[in-house]
Image (cartoon, rainbow, N blue to C red; front, top):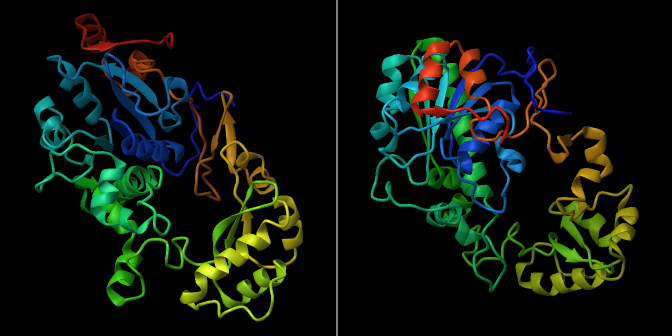
Length: 396
């Protein structure tokens, strides 16, 4: 699949939705990717000097979070910079930004500026700590927001430091996905009221929301405050990953008694084991399970588990997972311009979602994208000549 040119006929459930994404990193791009996957027409406003890349990626073409949309390059500090964005806002359903509180207002593209040009605009805001409060202006990253939420304290093995869960709970689950949900909810409400509104998504709030059930457990005595001693935090012997004879890993999740019985039978363990829920016996049971799993290779365990329900799975790495037969059969992963990546989710029966464009170089579509949204060609030429915008249609 060559994702370079957007099809004229979009099939995703958000086809026809117009979104302005003010370029950012992490949760903002993830939110925009979700909307683009589902068919939204998104123009990403990148910095004239080039958007920043944070993390291991060194190539805009391989920054998969930016897939599925077009990029224009704008100098937001130029006298005409705000006008370029506002000209798109007039034609858009949504604008989203990830600045620290107050920055968008100083640039002239804050909520009031945008609502003045389009009263129905949904204005999505993505921050770490929210638009107000003592920490509103404090810088941070995923680990900081997850830590402050209380969630990080619960993640990790017994006797070990808290373990950062990649950037999943703050940036992506608690940030970008929550913002996407908020934007869609605001769009639905607009069909009734006809009015736009601001969606304030903060990663510290979203991370806390992801841990809702665990905050309840902590207050009712059902969750021990020591990490790695509870049922889904690696404390339970029947909910963990064990090394196999060939140095690979088998994930076990046999929580229910009947699944646990199948696991015990699969591992050929003695019948006089301590009770499954005897937490005092868990350390001994974990060692028993570990010794049993080390007797066979990963493939042997998977073959022996066929036809039973022990809740076992191979721990696959990022290169192995796309090749698994189930993922191949379901199309869980797709390839776009040589890069294998997760396919859009969820699935829709009538309006299938697609990845229709590779990640853009900043400014790759400036002239074309502005024209496609009906911005006057003379204005575009003037902005380019004045240095308020730049066009890198050659992909350089």
